[in-house]
Length: 299
Image 1 (cartoon, rainbow, N blue to C red):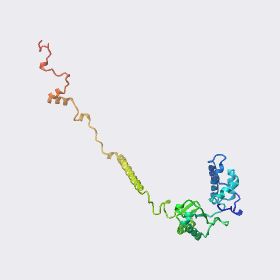
Image 2: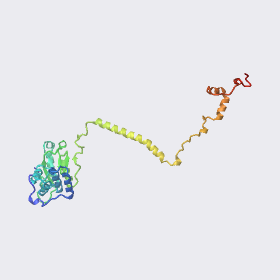
Image 3: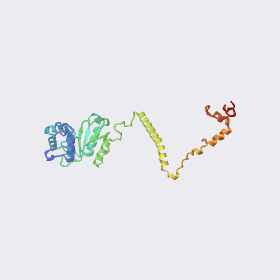
C-alpha cells in the first residue's frame, strides 16, 4: 500500500482531465496495445495523471482513467493502491523515500533518517501533507530500491542519491531547500558503482586501448600530411610556382638518327656498315661482280 487510503474529501478536487499534450501521449500509449486490450495501459496513464497533478492521484483522476480505458473503476483503485510509486494523497515538493532494507540499514540508513529529522523536523514516516498548503518536504521509509551496491541511498522524487552518510544527507537537504539539487548518483563522486579506490581490474586493457588510439591518431596525421602539402602548393600564386622543364624536341635529341649522321658514320666505318646490311639486301656492284654477257665480262 502507498498511503493506505485516499486523501480526505476536503482535499479532493472536483474534476480532472488530461491536458491536450497529455491526452495525446495517453492515446499514443493506448495505441501500443491491440483492440480490446487497452486496459494494459492503466499503469502508464496513472503515472501520467500523477505527474500532471502535483505528484499525487486524486480519486477523480482514477475515475477519469477508468472511463478512458473502459474498465471498472475498482480495477484502477486496485492498481493505484498496490504500487508504492502512486501517491493517493498530496506529497511535498521534495518527496524523500529512504531505503531501510538490510543492505542500506547495514551501511547506515539510520544516519540518513537522523539527518532528515534534524534538517526538516520530520520524524519517522511523514508520508503526505496534512494541511491545505503544500509542504516543502515529505518523507517515508520504503523497501529495496535496487541500488544496494551504493548503499545507503535516498530517492528524491524520481532521482537517486547514493553513498550517503549523515553529513552528505544534510548537504543534500540544504541544496534542495535552496532549489539547487546536486548531480544525481553517488554523493562521493565515484562513477557508477566502481570501487572507491578506483578501477582495479582490466588495467592492461586500458593501456592497450590507449596505445591503439595513439597509433590510429599518428596514422591519420601521416595520411593527411601529403594532402595538406598538395593543397598548400595549389594555393600558391601562379607566378611564384617553379615552371616545369619542357621536353626537348625530337630534332634536338642527341641520340636521334638523321641521313647526315648515317652517311658520316658509314664513311668512317665502312666495314661496320657492311656487316649491318642484311644478307639478301642488294649492295653496290664490285669490279669482279660484272654480269656475264656484258661488254666487259665476255661470254
